[in-house]
Length: 166
Image (cartoon, rainbow, N blue to C red; front, top):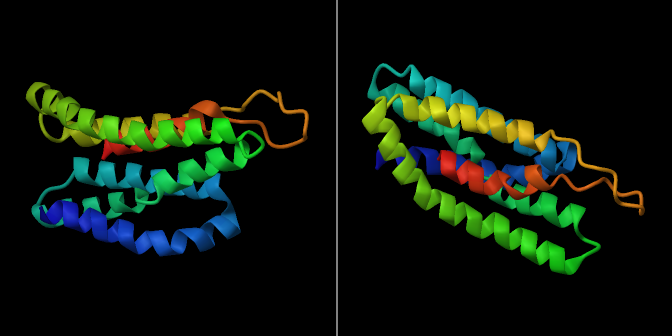
């Protein structure tokens, strides 16, 4: 319970600052930075030797807290010319997070039974690296209005995948 509280406190601390960071750096960069903090926290937890190090690692992982609103904001920015697509994409990102959050416990149970509890954090770090790579996939320039093209994998699956890794 203390581990979860530590992660949630870090997430609550980053949420108010996210808006200012988005204005300075942009949504995609802030999302990549927060996912990078999740990778660092997961690797820290992989090599943790005592409970204090576990708490510190969970606190570092908490910086991924603003990822769901960031991913929905990225979708809204890219799809603002089509309200139906915005609603569908935001729904997929939000409810996908809930589905994969439930699946995370099942996946973690299989990982712990098969390999041991430390490997949950290794899988978390690898999943976050995959998420970051998906966010960097260039989208096809199919938008004649001159807007930045939509990166569907990167913008739709960020929140569900991040919730799965938590």
